[in-house]
Amino acid sequence: MIDTVRLWTRAQPTTEHLIWWERQEKNTPAGKHYLEYHFNPSADTGIPIRATYHPESRIGPHLFLLEMSLPRVLFGSNWQLVFDIEAAITAADCIIASVNAFPPLSSVGDMTISRLDVCYNYLLGDLLPHYLNTLARLHYARRDSARFNTETVEFRAKSVKSKFYDKHRETNGEAPAGLLRHEVTLHGAAKVKPALGFERPVTLHDLHPHMLKQVLEDDLDRLGIHNRPFRTSLNAAQALTEKYGPIRGPRLFGVLTMYQQFGPDQIADMLRITKATVTRLLADVRKADMSTALTDTETDLPPLTITLPTDLPPFNLQTCSQTPGVTPPLIEDWIASMRHLSTSTVRRALNALSALFIWAVRFNHAPTNPVDRVERPKATLRIQPCPSCEQVAALLHACHGTTEQTALIAMATSGLRRAELLSLQWPDVDLTKGRLRIRGKGDKHREVLIFTELAAHLHTLHVESDLPRTGPVFRGRQGRALQQSTLQRWFTLWRQRAGLTPDNGDRFTLHSLRRFAAKQWLNHGLNIRHVQILLGHNDLQTTIRYLNYHLDEIQHAALLQQQ
Image (cartoon, rainbow, N blue to C red; front, side):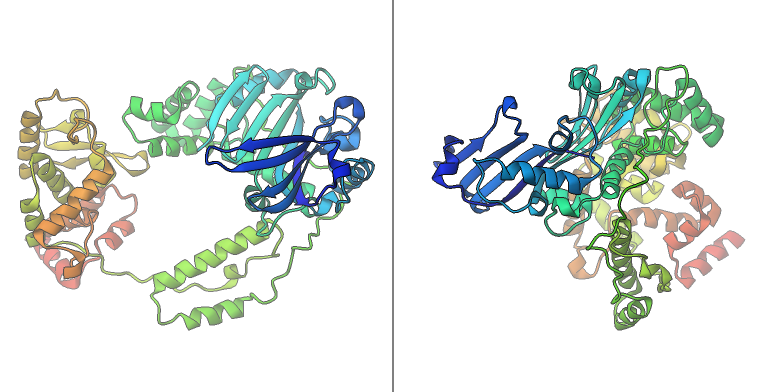
């Protein structure tokens, strides 16, 4: 399951060794001089190992690098999978010992890995072209996607690369036909360590096929295809409708269809939603037991599955431990020692410890997560900061221009979130009915009320902007959609001009204006259910926690409803 591997160690070849090497000198733009030696044997020598020697390097003197394909070392070709890593180490050590150009070296199994190609072969037969076409439609977060030809799909980042390609064509027919190679390349020791679950440099002796399988499955999971079939258009539409109903299901299918041709950024622009919303919609598609790429075949393509031989040696790493010192009683004592801290701080500390053990269990560094057997302190309800009517009036007085005033009034009277305010479009504004159509969190749409003062400011804003009633309501100086950083900067300036800074004890935030709106609705006679609908909360308990009312406020609202 390993193809190419690059290893480094410290070694100093003698002059007799270096006569077989090619000397190269380099000068950097900064004026530094580098000397290095390269050993690149030709194919007819039968030596499948290349080497580089740096007398001086950034990480110290006498840096000796080896690069080899373990399948080529063990089998003479690079398409077969290496499951017996120790056998490959022994074969590489024997080859190195027979090469006169190399100085005495430690075993390759003890050298530090600085590049690792983890790979697997899927025997797909005639379906291989369909898999490649389908994989080419996927988007890998924070990586560049590339389709070089009909045989290769790559997803690239600076230090990691995922690649799917036709191994039969790549080897000119040496590998069996219909063989899809899945390859994950990790560049740099700093990238290899976390990918394999280590905090120290990783060697070949540390590796096991189960560990490498996890790397490949993590890669499939990031692509959203782990244990998920590739659906046809018809089956995808049916599955989404069955799971989400006749309204949301077809809408998700529409987004999925667009995704086959466009990236998330383009879809967000066309649908006038945020990229985060597109990501959530595609995540909902995956929850219907399918990938986000549709196949052009008549039937669904099965998921790509990694299977290991049954006769592998046991997976007993020396790094595994039973962590005898971290037990539930010890964690409970630790919690008791933090009694002077707030409950939320203690819960965050426990969450961090639990995340560490989840990682440890996953990579066999610990048998279980002891945090799961500890009772966590219950969260306490804190009074969230909320501005008063006088403070909101002071902020409004500190605004410069109609756009700033309208933005403040929209949040303080209609309870809009920041993202909802910034994504508000003129077609969503209905001044006749006094309503705003909001694209909310989790791609939920709702309508909120336009109160008199907000309606007047929206009308003034439209007249002053002298723009057609299309596009975003709130724009910056260049006429483009207002950015969140600009809105936050406005709020900071409003507070400074109004003298409402944290130094003066006024610790409310921009989001507190939404809480202010909700309290005003309740104080003016709306019941808690109406407030829940206007805020867009699914659960009434969320609204109750959100308002976090004092007893006198609840009593005042109850009296208003009785009148």
